[in-house]
Amino acid sequence: VNNLPYTSQFGASGMYTGSVSEQYEPHGKGTMVYDDGEILKGYWNAGDLVRESELYSDDEDEDEDDEEEIDDLSSSMADIGSKVKGKYRSRSRSRSKEPTPKPIPPPPPPPPKPKTPSPSPPPPEYEVGDPGKHRDMIMDKEESLKVINQLKFGDGAFIRRSDGKWSYAVVKSLEETEQGKSAIRFLVNNRNSSKSYAKKYWGTHVRPLKGTKVKPAPEPDRPVRGASSESREGR
Image (cartoon, rainbow, N blue to C red; front, side, top):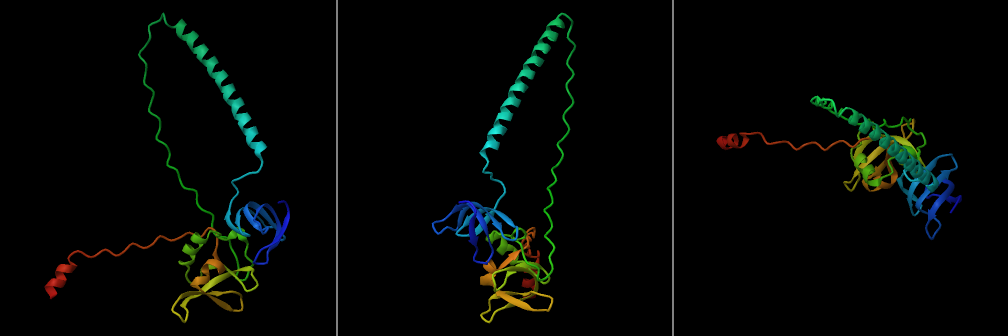
């Protein structure tokens, strides 16, 4: 479909172009242009963006033009190669009568330079209470939960408010519910108002900032040598 008016379950509305389901919800490859000017392009499932992508293109003509340019370049390089070979053969025939000196081996090629990994972009800067944008959130649920489990006091994330909109908040404390379940309390505005989210809501109501790295798990403590023998002597 083209330019299908659509409003998500969070209240964000816009025009959608791409594949849809039987209920006319974004489903498959498509692009959503929101009323606030934000553009999301990727793969959808029942109205939700499941994977953001800018790698595919609907313009097949550009691919055909690129293939034609590659064919033209290959043919021209083949012509140049044949001309160089012809000149080399004529020179070798003229020099065949002269004594050929011993060939000097070429110097070894320099070692390749080590590749330096490109640094990942830093997380975007927000103030508490600022509205969140999808392009600054980690949309993948599995990756998002890994980051949320490592949040600590002072870390920032986006939370979904009661009206369905996302806003920036800061971790105020890590706590437990009455049932003993893990929960995170966020500072949501400059008036020191806070809101707590139990662990079962982290996947739907909390989204970390894009660019936040997952910290490696700490290595287990190794047993000290001789501890068992000392304990036996103490006994």
